[in-house]
Image 1: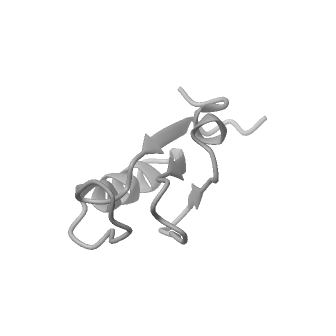
Image 2: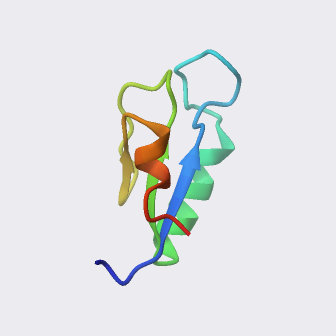
Length: 69
């Protein structure tokens, strides 16, 4: 088990039912969490690809929540 805490981020887009993460506050939040030493798993049913610093996009919300604090 990794010693860095894991944070789940559910929802990446700035509004519902779109796949655009531009202008989304979640991007900056994820960046700050990773810089602070957290691991981040993100889930959004509309986003197909997202890689920001050490974050990881997962296919299911349950995958994001597993082992998260």
